[in-house]
Image (tube, rainbow, N blue to C red; front, side, top):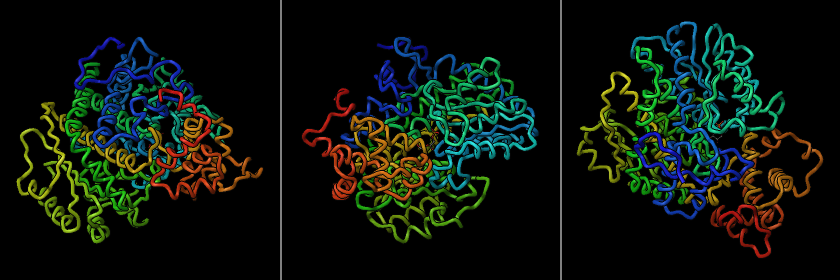
Length: 619
Ligand code: F1P
C-alpha cells in the first residue's frame, strides 16, 4: 500500500516500512526503533550490508503515506512550509549582519555538522564580500570536534550559558538547535533560554521525531523534560516566534545510531533551507519549488553514491579485515571531506567501543582548515593530531600491511601532493583505497590511476546555477562521502560482531540517553522487565552481584560516571540476563568468545530460556 506520490523521485524510494504502522515498537521514538529492513543486518555479507544501508538512507526521501500513521516527511507540505518560513527569517539576519547572528548548535555528530554548516555559509558570504554571520556551538567545546565527549550533552545550564556567551551584544539571533532524537539536554537548555528571551532569539529545533516522541524523563537537576520544552516551542509556531523542523526519516539502519540518517538528514534539511535563504537574498523569492530543486540534488547524490556499491562493499570488507587483525583504518581527506572523515572516525569510539586509534581521520591543513573557534588543539595529546603532516610524522612509520589507508579528494585538489602521499603510503601497505570526486569532464590522471589499485570514482554533473551551484556540488560531495563512510564503518563493525540483529550492543554508556538506550536494548533482547534490566545493568557497571543501597540511590549521572571506567558493560548484562548467570561468569564467557555477537547468539539458544519480546516479533 502506498500513499499518493506527489513528487517525481530521482531514486526509487522504498515502500513505507512496517515501522510506520500503529503499534510498532510503540514505546520507542522513531530514532530509537529498530528498522524492520535491517533486522538481519548481523547476518549480511558486505554487499548485502551496503544494499540494506542504502535502502535505509533512501527512506530519508520517502513521502508521507496517508494510509499509515500521519508522520510528516521531508517532502510533506507542512515541512516545506516551515523550511520556507525559517529561510525567510534567515534572510532578515542576512540583511543586518552587524547585530544579528545565526547560531547552529548540537552534540556529537550534530555539533560537528553545526560547525561544518556554519563554515560553509560563512564561506559563501565571504565569497560575496559580505559579513559572516553564522556561528556554531558544540557541547564539550572544540575538543569534541575530534574526540568523543558525550557526557557534556547532559547539561542544559551549560548549553544556555554557551549560547548567551556567543550572542553577547546581538539584537537578533536565529538559533538552530539540532538534536536528532529530540533528546539532548544541552539543546533543551538553549531552547528554553531562547524562549525566555524572545525579544532577541528565534528558536528553531531540528530533529527527526514527532514532538510526542521527544524524550520525556525530567532532565536531572533541571525543571523540565526535553518534551516539555519542545511542547512549549510548538505553541509558538502559529505566531512564528519559534519553529520545529522534525520530519520522520525512519529508524536508523543500526538502531539509535543517529550519526547516520539523522546526521545526513540534518545536513540535507539545513543546507537546503539556508541555501534558499541566500538565493532569496538576491531577489529570488523563497518558494517550494526552490526548496524542491535543491532537495532533488541530494536524491541524485544518493543515486550517484550507491552506483558504486560493489566498491563500497570491497572497502568495507578490507576495513573489517584490518580491524580483525588489530590493524587500523586511516582516513585522509582534503578540505571539508577531511572533516567528514574525522566525524565518522570519532563516532566509532562511542558507538562500537573502538579504541581512538582504530579508525582515525586526518585533514589537509589540520585545524587551520577546520576553522574552529579555539584554534590548534594538537597540544592536548596524540588524539588531537589531525593534519596530514601529523599522519606522516607520527603514524605512517608504524603503518603495516594490516592497515587500510583511505584517501578522499576531489580532482580540484593538489594531485601532485596526493601522488606523493600515495607513494609514501604504498611503501608501508598495499591496502590503499581512494574516494575521488570529479565534475563531469574531469578525469583522474593516468599516473595516479596506475598507482592506486582501488578507486571509488564519483562523477558529479556541472550545475549551471550561478554562484550557489558550486556549493551544491560541495554539499553533494560531502554527503556522498558521509554516506560511504557511515556504511563502511558501520558495516565493518557489524562484520566484526559488534551488532546483534540491528542493535548496537557494545557502546559506551557515557550519557543519560545511552544509559536509557542500554536498558531498552536489554529489554528488547531478553524480554525482561525494565526494573530487572536496570538492576542487571547496574550489576554490570559496578561489577557487583548485590547492589548496595548507595548504588541504588545514585543518580543516572553517577551511574554514567561509573560506567566510564568499564568496558563491555552492556554485553555482560545481556549475557548475564539471558543465561541467568553471574556478572563474573558472563564476563569470562564474553572474553572467551569469538565476538560479542557470537556470545549473545549462543546465549539466546540456551535451553529453557524464556523467550524475549523481540523473538516473538517476525523472527
Ligand atoms: C547526539 C549524539 C549523536 C551521536 C551519538 C550520541 O544525538 O551525540 O550525534 O551520534 O549517538 O548522541 P542527538 O542529540 O543529535 O540525537
